Image 1 (tube, rainbow, N blue to C red):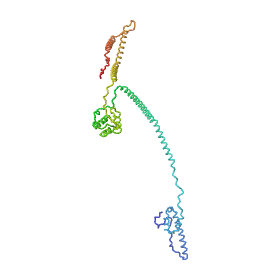
Image 2 (image 1 turned 45 degrees about the horizontal axis):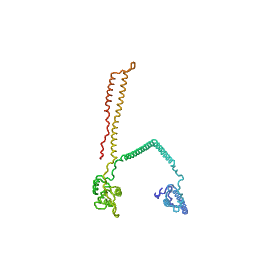
Image 3 (image 1 turned 90 degrees about the horizontal axis):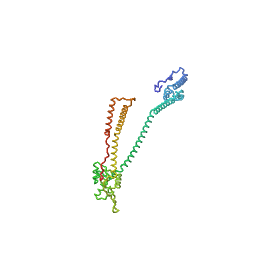
Image 4 (image 1 turned 30 degrees about the vertical axis):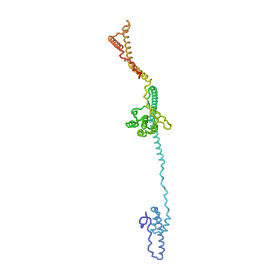
Amino acid sequence: MTVSQDNSQPPAGISEPPSTDTNPPDSSSDRPSLSTLTSTSNRIELLDKARHFLSSPQVVHQDYESKRRFLVEKGLSDGEVQQLLREMLPVVPPRMYPAPTPSNLPGLLVGTFKVLSWLAGGSTALLFIYYRFLLPRLTRSALARRSLKSHQSDLFAKLTESLDNLKEEQRVAYADLPHPYPWEEVVPWNDCKSLNDIMAVIESGDSHVPRVTLLRCALAELATQNKPSTADEVFQVLFSTGLQSLLNIDDAYQESLWKTLNDAPLFQLVEPSSQSEPPRWSYQNPEPAPQPTAPLLPSLTKLQNSVAHAASARGIQRFQHTLQALIDVTGYLTTKTYALASAMHRLPGTASVSATPIEEEEVRLEIKALKGLVLNRRTFMPAIPRPSSAPVDKAS
């Protein structure tokens, strides 16, 4: 039952209190006592019903104010309502609690065991596949790579050794040959007379300027300007022109120019007459290229003779197999011829071999062919070339 229902209707189990407007008894002497007893009995009955009402399951969980308001409306005083509410026992939860939920530990342990078993089985299968199929292939591949690397190292070692031997042989073979002149100027740089000529050649597409040409033109530029050809002036005239941007002259390039100026025999340092003046540089025209040395001509003659001898030796060895085959054929035919002749002239009484006319004719033909081969044997061999060399002009 809720409190919001019509307050005029009493809750279940509680009846309306009897009306106090009862007809008075006829006896005037008993009227006060009867009314007092009736009201007292009604009051006790009303309290019992109110107590029963408060203990009903539908009302026991209602709030305090709702219960109090309903009892006051039913004619109970505040003291009676407070006493009834105090007499009500507090709400006690039932003594039978629901059974606790079963523990998840066994299921958790079973699941963990299943997961571990699957992991162990999968790991075992993977290890088996790895050791059975993958590891042998990886091992073979690693061994093949190692052997290939070792083979390459051996080949590189042999190549290095052969290159060293080749360098040593070239050093010994080229000892008699004239060495190139390191300070020689090539075309078109040897035709440059000034820095403007160098800039023109650079603009045409050739940007590799020899250091000797650059220094020579710088000294010539200083000579035309009547300036002292000191090292500072040389570098100053190089920086004053547009060559610095064209050649990208940096510290390393300046260092190489200074080294060329000091190492090249074409540039000479002229000491000044007085100590107050700085030393000057001058350019000396190079001497003409030296003629071939004397040991070069005999070496060339010896080389020509050896080449001619090697060519003749190769020509003889070329037909050696043919000559040997002819010698073998000659021996075979000779053996057959003497065997046939000895069989025809055997003594009487011995076993003889009669030769048919066809066999005799074949033997005669083979003998004639053999004679032709032997007599014309020189046609199979070329003439041995004689080593010839052009006369050496001693004047040259």
